[in-house]
Length: 300
Image (cartoon, one colour):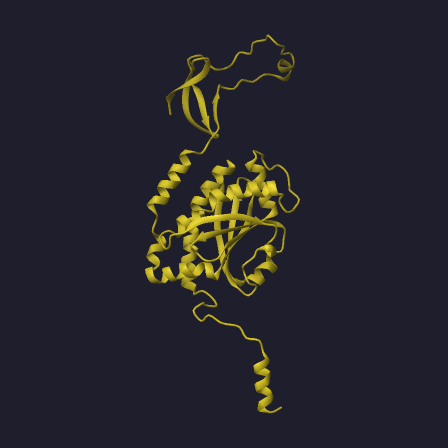
């Protein structure tokens, strides 16, 4: 085949534009800086997740990987909850994938359950997904606080998709930063969730990192700490007042009838224990406010 034939083959091949400013991959130092920002997100996010579910929770970053969107679709092909949101003015959406087992446990706990059963993997219903979005809407805005030393962003437009394949606006050949988090909720064991940042969403962040240095990554935001402290003041907790326990035999319990009086082992002069969300914090004495019983705090 002559040179003329070679030229026609080249001429017939489809072409596409290429932006040389957009890197194919991020540098190791850039990835590490982003990981440090996400670590500063995970700490307050753990606190807020626990406050919403009313059980001790922990979120830890496991690692990151740079992959094509097409690769991510192949790897995260299981059933789960898919949430999409924006960090304005970053130009691209961010995607969060949560496996169905964790998503359904989250719903159960949010509704006051204790997760004493295993859930069959399935796509959450619309009502369940709205509950999941409600919890994520409290936790994910901490990303903006974590990024604030580098770039100001605003958490917006949180919504859900039936599956990752239905997420629009991310080309199959788009490079993304896939971030795995370990989520531990109470005694339920840890499960992984994946947060996906397409490279266009990271470009303004990376450019700011390059111009302002790594020192800003470790800077703590004073406004964030004030905001977190304010939010924690609004968390509702269970408060119980306990008398000293007594022991009865099974026969004594069976013979109880209306009108019987059970003597408590608590002396009238002894203070009562005030239990706040399972922790012994105060001691008090019974009193009344109007027509209601009350407790007067006497010591910590």
